[in-house]
Image 1 (cartoon, helix red, strand yellow):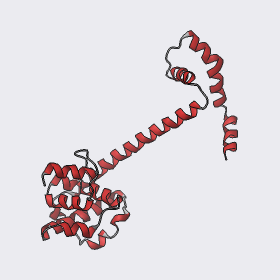
Image 2: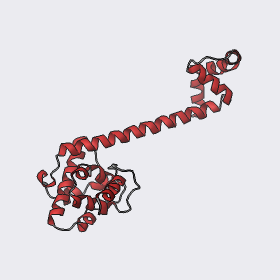
Image 3: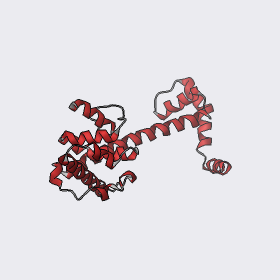
Image 4: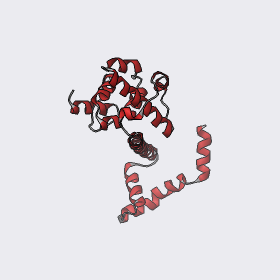
Amino acid sequence: MKREDLLKKAAGLGFKLFETEKPEDSNRTLAQVVESRDTRLWEGFPVMLANAARGGGFKYEAVKSLLKGRPAKKNFDALIRMALAVYKALGFEFSGLKNCAVKSPRFNAAVAGVPIEKMKNVFKDYFHDKEEDLNNMLRVKEGMDIEYAMSQIFTAKQKEIFFKKLRQEKLTKTEREYFSRVIKKKAQALSNPELHRLAHEVLK
């Protein structure tokens, strides 16, 4: 298999050198990564293994059966053990990998030829990016929740003036008068702590 094709498959298991769809067979992709002897891919093995396990498709014996020759199988076991060491060091646990510690023999780190610290850094970077994605998603959701809540109280025009005021943008004379006459009163009602308390009581 061409390296470019394998990189694309690896991306589907979280090691995104290239964007692609998730591979149909994560076990085959993991086997191909092991046989590639590509250091860059091996550094990302804990990421790919974790995603395969979380997706429920990872099978230790299935990967091993796809590997040709004793050296590839030894490398696979070494990579598995190194990945498990990375997870343990960083406080991660994946239910789909519980049996791997028993099945794979103790590893010699030199077999895989990849520094475990490098693996750890790649894994941390990946999950940091995932955390950022989650935070961004939550911020978007929070914004949508606020938008929905405001739409229950303010008209579209009132929301527009409200946010202009919030951003300290200059209001026209008509907008200032409308803000003082209508929007300000609604905002004052919303900021009333007793009203908040009563609303929570009603919604229980």
